[in-house]
Image (tube, rainbow, N blue to C red; front, top):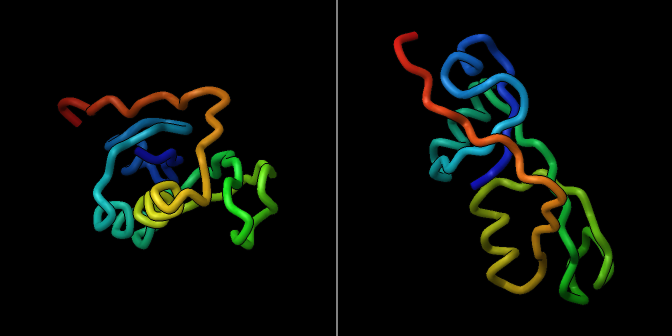
Length: 96
């Protein structure tokens, strides 16, 4: 799951106004970002490894990562999410 912001009236109608969380596939995410419908909202991460360029081990960094990149970095032990407050989940819109 990643955090996004709708950028167009069509995206607001499909997802939500403001910041929302959604569980898009990597291909869906790339398509929506590429079309300019949504943008990634940066998240806070703790750097866990000594060889990650975004920060030193123990640092907290703010990054906007594609879903598949984030998963690889988390699974590889480089980053851990630091979620201060979960974003609102997108509710499916009906009848629009």
